[in-house]
Length: 170
View 1 (cartoon, rainbow, N blue to C red):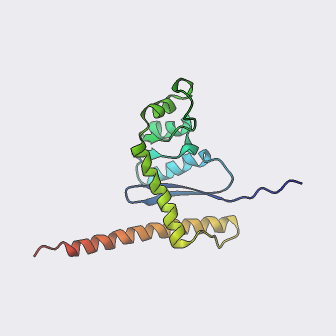
View 2: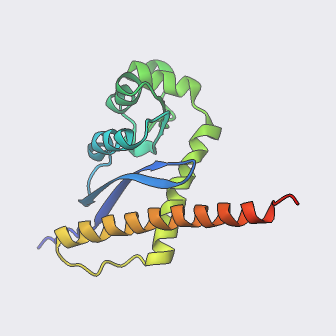
View 3: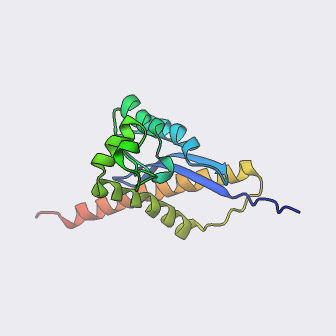
């Protein structure tokens, strides 16, 4: 007897990393590959704010991902290769080879801000879903992302207001 496969939620977000705001969300029942959600999330994020650098983890490494970022949006792609041990001459794809040559750990490290967003959402709003059905869960996650963005914007406004009061010149 085979055991039923446990399905979990897979959340893919597009984020503006300077202010750490969520620009696009895609929720899916897992297990599933990351690459399927890359295009829709990037397109939605680009419609909200133009992309300068597209940063993703190894799950998004494909020639199509690099082509989308570079050709369609004229952005730099910073996605580490899935196959680090494979020599450059055996790597498939023009953009994937270029990525291997010019990969910058300093730029890629900005991806940790995505993990910070997930951490803040889980710490402030919990990691359990109250909804049972897929539609309710999707709506709940979207509302959490909206609440997170509102919290970030409000805190930056208050911080800016308090800083402007403290730097008054008499």
